[in-house]
Image (cartoon, rainbow, N blue to C red; front, side, top):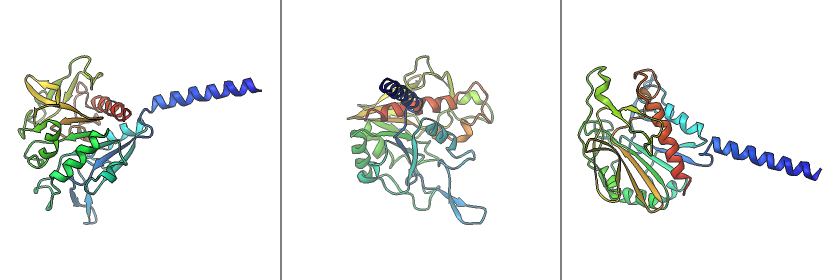
Length: 267
C-alpha cells in the first residue's frame, strides 16, 4: 500500500508539472492601464462606456483576442483605472500601457509626469515587466509619455512610418529574421503608422527596419521593458479576419506573451 501511495504521489507530481508547463503564467497577473488610456464613448443607451484598447472590447479596437492568449497561459488579467503607485503595482507582474491619451481623445487626459514615471521605474527595477505600446504623434501623447520611456533609454520619435494606402498591405510589412529572440515562430508581421524609436543606454534594439529602430528592450535592475511605437495587437490585426494569411500578427502576439511571461517568472 505504501508503495502504491508513493507511485500515486509521483504520478500526481508529474501531472502537476505537466499542467504547470502548459500554463507557465499560472500565478502571474497582467495589468492593463486604463488611466493614461482613458477613453469613453456614448453607448447604445447614451451613457458613456469605456473603449479603445481594453480587455473586454471585442470589436476591432479592443484587445480581447490578446487577452485570450494571456488566459491560455494561465495569466490573470486585471486593469488599473487610477494613477500607478508602489502599492497598486505590487499586485501585478506585467504592466502594459497602450496609446496614452491626447486632448483629442479625452477632455482631461492623464498625462505622464515625473512622479508617476519614477514610481513605474522603481517597480521595473524591482523586477516588474513593463510593456509600452505607443502610437504616432497624431494619435497619442508622446511629449509627456517620453518622461517615462526615456528612463529606460527609449525615446519615441513621433513620426508615422508604414503609412498604408487602402489595402496595400505590403506598405505595412516587416519581415522577422529566423531565430528572433522575442518572435521565434514568426516570419512576417503587419504594423502601420508607427513611431520609430531612438535609443540610449541601457536600451537595445530587438528589431530594426534598416537602421531605424522599431522595437526595443531595456533591462533595469531585475526588470524588463518591451517597447513598440504602435498598439499593434488590437483585434483588427490579430483576429485573422482582415489581414492576408501571410501576416502572422496573432502568432507574434502569442510569442511576445510567452516571452513576457518568461521574464515575469524570473522575478
